[in-house]
Image 1 (spheres, rainbow, N blue to C red):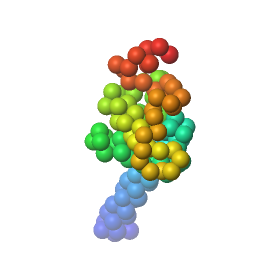
Image 2 (cartoon, rainbow, N blue to C red; image 1 turned 60 degrees about the horizontal axis):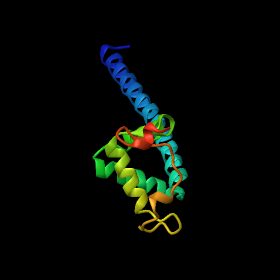
Image 3 (cartoon, rainbow, N blue to C red; image 1 turned 45 degrees about the vertical axis):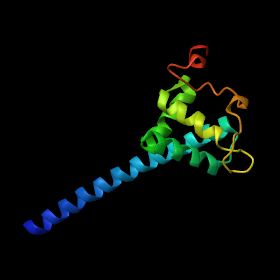
Image 4 (tube, one colour; image 1 turned 180 degrees about the vertical axis):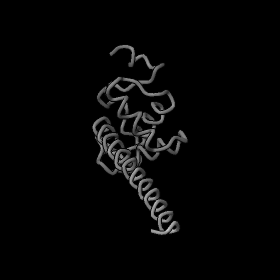
Amino acid sequence: MTGGSREQSEQRIAALEAEVDQLQRAVVSHAVVDQAIGVVIAVGRLRPEQGWEVLKEISQHTNTKLREVAEYVVQGAHCGWLPDEIHHALVSALSRTDPRSGAGGNSGVGSLPDPGIGSRGDSRADSH
C-alpha cells in the first residue's frame, strides 16, 4: 500500500467513524423527542401530531433546541419540575391547543390532569 492510499484510507475511516457517531446521537435524540411527544400528548390529551407541534412551539418561543426541550419534558415527567421558561411555554402552548380539532383554541389548561410537571418556582412542584 502506498503512502497516499494509506492516508486516503485513514481519512475515509475517520470520516466513517464520525458519521457513525453522528447517526448514533441522532437515534438517541429521536428517541427522546418521541418520549417527550408521548408525555405532551398524555398531559394535554392531544394527538401525536399535536404533541410534535407543541414541542416545536416551545422550542421556538424559548429559543431552545428541540432536543433539549424534549429532554426537559421527559425529565420533568420523572422529577416533577421544569425550568420556568419551558414550563410557562408548555402551559401556554397547551392552552392554545384544542385536543379535539388540532386547531388553536383554549382547551383550558386548568382542566388538564395535574401532570406533576411544575417549575422550580411553581408551588405544584413543591406539593408533590
